[in-house]
Amino acid sequence: MVMTEMCRCCGQVLGEYVFKAHIFDRLVSFFECDRCGYVQTEEPDWLDIAYASPINISDTGILARNFSNVSLVLATLTTMKSKKSQVVDYAGGYGFLVRLLRDFGVDAFWADLYSENLVARGFEYEGFGNPKLVTAFEAFEHFVSPAEELRNLLKISPNVLLTTTLVPKPTPKPQDWWYYGLEHGQHIGFFRVRTLHYLADKFNLHLLTDGKSYHFFSEKKYSYLTWNLFRKIARFAPKVLSYDLASKTFDDHLSFRK
Image 1 (cartoon, rainbow, N blue to C red):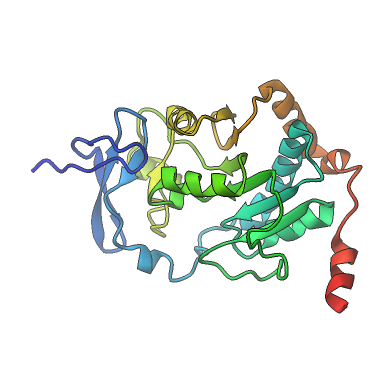
Image 2: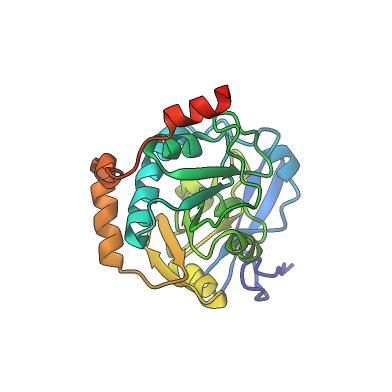
């Protein structure tokens, strides 16, 4: 029997599944969109099981990734010439990134509908200020409706910085690509560069991408060479890009003592 689904990114009617794989006790069909390249699971009815804990047990790279993301944010703010602007970390998890960014002097705030804020308490974003950048790191592969989620992010800021690992072409089999995350069931949609270009065009945005994991949607057009240069500098010496920022660590401490 031929199964059909709608692409949850662009709305295209999808054809037959490309493969099936087990997620928990379910045999789940995966589909690929001919129009935008998005690869998705069938309608995910297992998310209540997958999110019994918001941070899955196999995510051993969570701390290393947050240190890396500090460099990415600093490089992007430097490219935008907006280092002293407000930043909101959407799907901020336990708050590690927000706390690290504030330690570097970035005016960062936390937002997450599903996770508890453990280490950035007191810096929850509640719609105030004028954020110049919103981040969504390792989040888009979790979203049921990525285009609608991007729309929501753009209500916070016209500039969106995200990370998600792009799916190779041809589409790998379940056993050949770790990023499907079948053991935890939280990853339900996977992007290609043309998927990102579809989203950029849909919302009249400019796109910078390294073609692998780092992707920046922006209201204004920025140079990829500049962004890439600052990413390289920040990767090895993040303090070089934060030289004119004052750490908020002790000031935050004092504000809570009061």
